[in-house]
Length: 159
Image 1 (cartoon, helix red, strand yellow):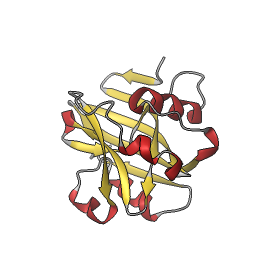
Image 2 (cartoon, one colour; image 1 turned 180 degrees about the horizontal axis):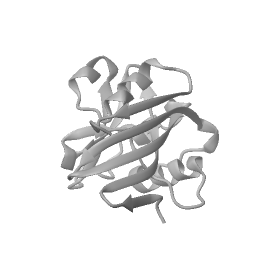
Image 3 (tube, helix red, strand yellow; image 1 turned 180 degrees about the vertical axis):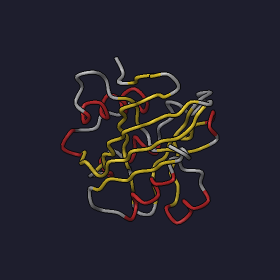
Image 4 (tube, helix red, strand yellow; image 1 turned 45 degrees about the vertical axis):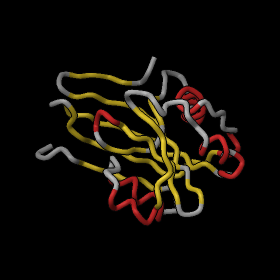
């Protein structure tokens, strides 16, 4: 069961996502419903370790099995936002993919969700990220920041 709790008008999610950078490009998930992009990932399940969760999510979404040794905790992002008139509070562990070249063919030729009505995946030039509706916007900072840090984004006013 996903770790996602609703209390009154507030929803809490425990998520993981993956930062994949190859040279001057970043791999992003297009979320058609939101007309935005984000890092590929998903929710952690009850009693599941976060690294196992990102591996499972990438197998489900991309059809790619990443090795644990190729994943490294990169950042912690805490995000509050409003979606469908509901306050969402997300806690996300961001893993960076090391040895990207090992998976490059699979990522570049991934057609798993290309025709999906919801999401698809693409490479974007890092130099053009300012022109991309990347949510949360703090993810743009992950490209510059090489250290494990915490990023807090509060898009809920008056809280």
